[in-house]
Image (cartoon, rainbow, N blue to C red):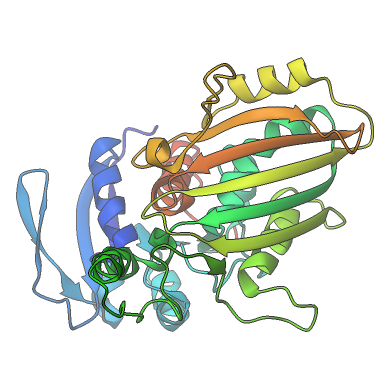
Length: 345
């Protein structure tokens, strides 16, 4: 990494991902010159401890991005769209965790373990993919490098953390209410999630696929630079507080040697192979929570398809699925001196 230091702003600093961004900047010793915490006027004035100092959360405004090098944005798509012009005009790089710009042809969609070179082409904005897409991409990219994947069928088991800190708290309250024989509150989700599960509650398209599922389809194709890649996703919300899991079926043109697949995953960056076949012990959300690596295991041949492989993963949605990937993008652009847009330069 460069010896320079950088001015960073976190937009959405008081949310679940914003809080994790703050922790990661400290843990990973990001070269900070200054740090600015931005949020809505409702959160302005909140005191946050960072590296022994108390930082005051500021209300975001047009002048908030002056002299800022990197903005880590995690306040939702509407907020990102509202402030992107001010951020770019101020000369800062926006690393955006929302879906606002992911499918914009002029905006790189980056997972550093998969397509780091894409970050170099930014024009002031780099998009962070959807959480489930990030986790899947990290897990299957090493295999795709050996033999191109022809088709992906994925089923997700998504925790409450994907809907934010309030949703996680709601599941706790629902659990207490149900055990007490009371009606569980439902504000973050349309239905009780405690002791329950349901398809992801984003809008459905004409084909019956929800928005979350189409994110996985379209984003994976963009990240892999494979517009013809066949992807089918079923996204389910489950009563887990933190960390998503995914069951993935991969189809290749030719049979894929199982031992080579296991070695490729074991040696890949950002992955921890978790397999104890005798104990029937494989990746679990409880083990993935708070961890940087995507836990991958139960790698096996598809009995119904000679060219297919099956695998299972768990990964922390707030860390690698959101905040960590954003910080890794920031580390990437400063290390390779890609902070300033080549277009602007």
